[in-house]
Image (cartoon, rainbow, N blue to C red):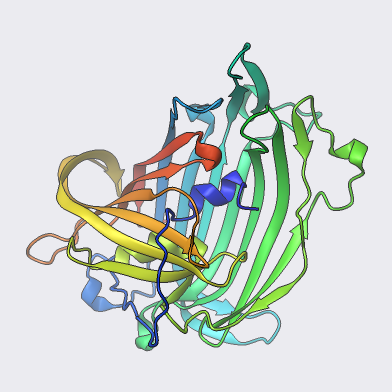
Amino acid sequence: MKKKLALAVLAAASVFALSACSAKAETNFSANWLSDPSAVHDPSFYERLEYGLTFTPDEDSAFRMDIDADNSSYVTEVSAGPYVDEDSGTIYTDVYHLHTELTYSAVYTYTPAEGEAVEAAAFGGAHDTADSDADDPAKMVSDVYFRSKADGYNLEPLYSKTSYYSYSPAEINSPAVSLYNYTVEIEYADDGDTATVRYTDNWADLSEEECAAGEHLTKTKLLSAEERTFGGLQSSYTAIDANQLAFAARGIAFSTENATTLTVFGGNAHDMRVSISCKEIAEQHYAFTLDGQPMDADISTAQATFAMSSGGSQSGPARTAYYAQRAADGSNPYYCLPLRMDVPVGNAIGTITYTLKDASHTK
């Protein structure tokens, strides 16, 4: 499951082997997504961010991915409001709902050490046909509900659901590509300390013949869709859902002197650790639209590196994100926005860069 491209895109990554702690190392997030973080919570808060996608290939990789930028995007929407637990009927107030949609169209090309390039898979955009689901665009859609900073809470997750439709190279030395189609649903309890995970594999009932989607493309089933429960998520570090990570990191007081470690849960492991360190805080130039106004400015930016480990073992290359910082006078004109994110793609194919195009705080 670690090969899935959709998981690789949104997870924060590279790896440090972290030693166990005897006491919880807690991270207290600041509400830096608000124009006035000291307000702690705004019950009318709304934000929509839209990013453009570009891809930089790894020159040493036999696989190449060419993204159709006109038919690819990453959009996040977060709004404050209540959340109703459908099973218990419990109503939670002052909750954030974060909805994300990643869509990309691309062509995978495989070039062996000796031989000509082979088109391994082509999907989305001009390649998307009405009579086949094996060329639909790759897509990841997630919804996560979590506590705000109101009443002393600290972004504890309540519920998340993520649907994946993803294409991923099955091997590094062949043009084989796997197409996954599944959903992960997570219900949290005990202020995010316990998580029950349920999987829905949309390919589960397909025959071997039906799984053959093309010369190099195979509809691939999950290895296991068994329901699982994990506990003790909050025992060592502050725990959040994986879909919260880019948002929650806005609440970190970045410093080149210190790193922050979180437990980040995505349904696959109970002990995923993400260490977030700041390489530098410097003026960088960005151009995007903020609440309808074109911005073309030098912005104080924290360059943050996300390093991931699971069970003390490395879990992929480092991801980098660039966050706007509050001004020296404490004002927050850029809402500590994630202005850019560099995310390596699985199997060392290259790096997808997400660049902020538009930020809006009104519906």
